[in-house]
Amino acid sequence: MRVPGIETSCDETAAAVVDDATGALSIVANVVFSQVEQHAPYGGVVPEIASREHVTRLVDVLESALAQCGGWAGVHGIAVTRGPGLVGSLLVGLQLAKGLAMARRLPWVGINHLEGHLSAALLADPPPAYPHVALVVSGGHTHLYKVEAFARYMVLGGTRD
Image (cartoon, rainbow, N blue to C red):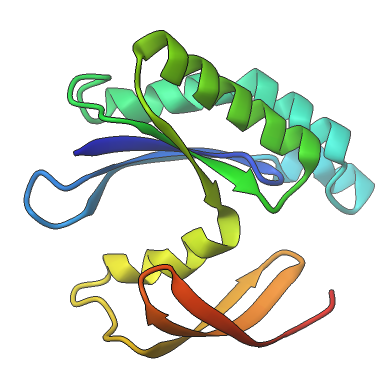
């Protein structure tokens, strides 16, 4: 199964494609456009600039990721960040994913950005055994989790940044 994923939760426009054709999940494409230069003059992320940059860059970023692995052939669905994040930025990714899913008659799934960070560890070879402890440090979200099984976790502690 091949699934492209769209990430627009804050100030980076990203698209990746995962595939399990070999029997193991692997990332077959990953393209990121960083907005660091656009936000640098302001000393931090400006939400309006972030969402406008996503509008400008997202289609090219997704097309580039898909071009690295054969285009839409074999794509079974679309994943997209649904939160948490900047509302305007999230809407850009969600609308593209929903529109493409409708046009291509594919299912789409909204992904929690922080759960994505937790699940990324499962791409390691070998993946961590359950239960394990995971630390997520992502922008304003820093949490320590006890991970019991896939999609079963509890917050042990976190910051209030």
